[in-house]
Length: 126
Image (cartoon, rainbow, N blue to C red):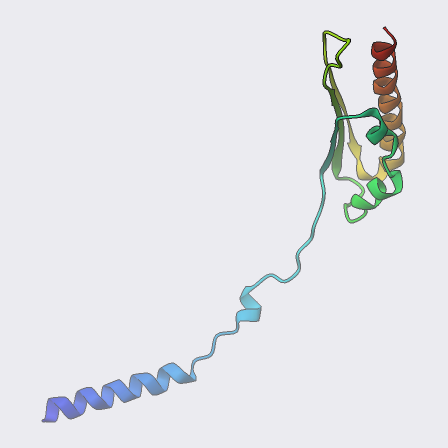
């Protein structure tokens, strides 16, 4: 009987002590999260899709990045062969640089896209 009373007392004491201990979850979690986008890729099946890229939207994608972070823009086109052609066209290119130079990267991307369009037009006219 004495052992049973001691066990019951220990049981209730451990429950009481266990209820008084609180854990601060907010201190152990990192709520400051930072999102950064390091690359963006366009892969299209027609030249018209390349011509309709919204460059302001591209610029806003990388807004949250720090100026010294490296970003990469990639563009690809894959055209299936038409009935009168024997080959298909597949081409891609990438530009890479710092976030602070996004305007230069966009300018280089536009030049590369114009090159893809010229390649397509040359292919279609032959």
